[in-house]
Length: 332
View (cartoon, rainbow, N blue to C red):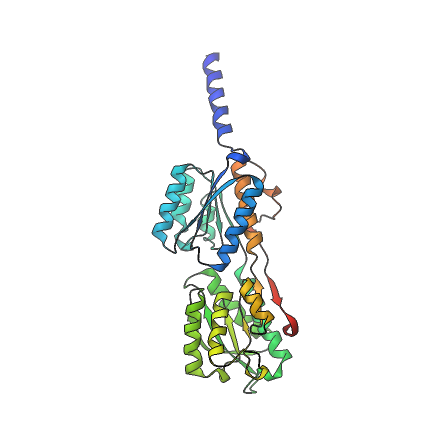
């Protein structure tokens, strides 16, 4: 009886130790919704750099914006025996099957950038989310426009005291699109300015789509009647600027300028701001989000205290990275 007890105890100890990987053995499988996204490129670079620093191995795959492809990649990672998953879902509302797969394999899963519902995350104690609160970015983008409108009376082109704007939205159904759109307009209202939406359209976070849509807006409305452009991200803001240039706006002449704001603070947006083509942006801190994702994944895989990774964890589920307004030169 004593011999059987010792054998059982030894077996359980082996199992418990094998469930916790050493740093140089940790394998992280990371699924990105698509690689040709400027923001997610920064995210990927941050994850790779932090993994190297911690000595963990990370494999990052391109979901090509296809749910079927991404689900196959998750299956492959689980079969390959990764210690933890990092997932940027193509469709955040389809995250539950991903969570169920991870739970069945007893693999922790860290979602990034696209937030599953609270109920989904609650269904698995080892499911987490890292991102930024989209309502903050919308509020700050709207405040940038309101501040400019108040500081520049000439921005009110028809002198009616109202702000006529167009809105370029991200992906349909994406929580960032919904909240950034809503809160940017509310921020303008809260600043005491009446916003008037002239037009809006889905441009899927894409520069080319935004340029084509903005070209259509300027032809239909006339650029002289547009007093601001609010874009849910920088790529769409940059596309809008290219379209405005086609109408000889935002090329350096203050009499032919329409303030454009975006979100992300990517390098191209900062360059456009330095040239006076773009009013401002809101920093969506991909570096800190990517770093936090790998630190959390590493701690989960190695059995370390997740509260000691250098980022505050709320409700034992979430790490929130704050946004920050970015302006340049005389636009401040």
